Length: 103
Image (cartoon, rainbow, N blue to C red; front, side):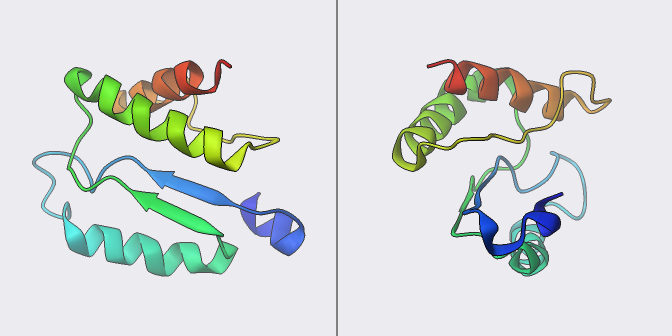
């Protein structure tokens, strides 16, 4: 979907973790790999959180970051992982995004 939007819209990305805790592919190489892949959609900005995993105690930190980005960008549309995703960290991001975008 993001590729189909092309240059018609500005895209601002938020990557919430460097991968899952305990996953051997987690870390800065994951961030670099993601940045390389995301160049194809030509984002105006990409924000990477520099921690692996997303725990319950990370809610407020991520909420502040997303709220700040949303306030700065003032988006017309927000695309996010969904509430029925099978990965628990993806569901947490959905919950945080709903809170960040509520206003």
